[in-house]
Length: 180
Image (cartoon, rainbow, N blue to C red):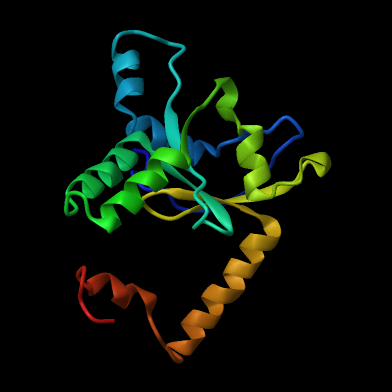
């Protein structure tokens, strides 16, 4: 059975036209969490392909974030549960409405990232840049290799600041809103 979460690290090339592959492990999660895809398959559509929601908001300075269709729906639901008309709700809604796009996976597990998103993310198309796709449990991220390396350095620094022997899994015992 396929994992229901995005895990792992996968280096991928993106060509000058914005074509790149999505790792099979991530495609399995996207398929399992795309109601429209599942409906099409159940109806016998052998050519059905899953989609995902790509977020490229300015707050994501170092990467793009990709959510399964179900995962994106949960994010939208959490925004709808916020205080109606609040500044926080307005910011969250505007971010998703203005800086996300549905991406369909084509045959052979490839996608085409729109040029405007590639440019915003700083992908160098002339060289066929290598990107790093990383699982973040509920979604996956797309980094340039330099941004990925910087993230790894920062994460290592944060872990070291917690002291020798720190087990990051102890953080999973904390509830939302609990003091760190």
